[in-house]
Image (tube, rainbow, N blue to C red; front, side):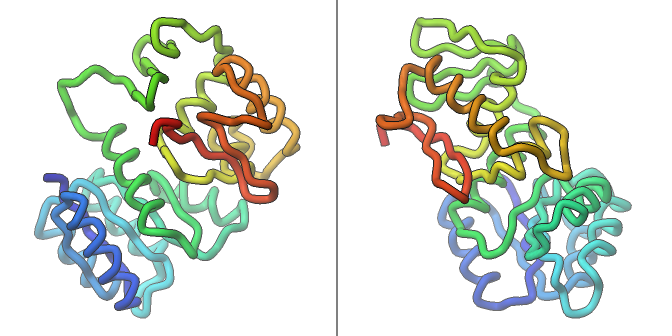
Length: 227
């Protein structure tokens, strides 16, 4: 049972997250302040930490640095600061992932599972399966059932990034930063074109999407068409 530490000063958010994660099979601990969270992390072992930046006692960036000083526990930062400079600063400070407030419990749970897949030592093959779609992370290959998909390196990385966050609407800004390594943004058309190419290879169209769903002004998400 993976253990999660939620560091969040808002009681309603903290309780809602704790209840949702516990209901999904996680062992959850919670802290109301930065120093309380650091103390818990120093005394207990957690598989992942969800850290709110807007804490009442210590700035979230300082808490992130303290957690990094304690070890390599994965940290997902929840922040209302969505500027590119702030995101870059977060990642450079040691955050493993981030979500922009307001976020849903479903979104944070998907992020936690994605981080755990990347960091936890398992004996299962390194692959992701969503419906008929199978992504072999070690072999750097993707298949639709028995049919191999002829993907470029960038298409594979884009597909993998979305597949690691199933059901989560990912912004084009985030995709440009994480897939194209352009943290200060770039042309939205770059993402649009690659999504269009991926759709063709997945056997779908924008008019009749199956796996890839877009929302104008919001982003792209990958879903299991069978659910």
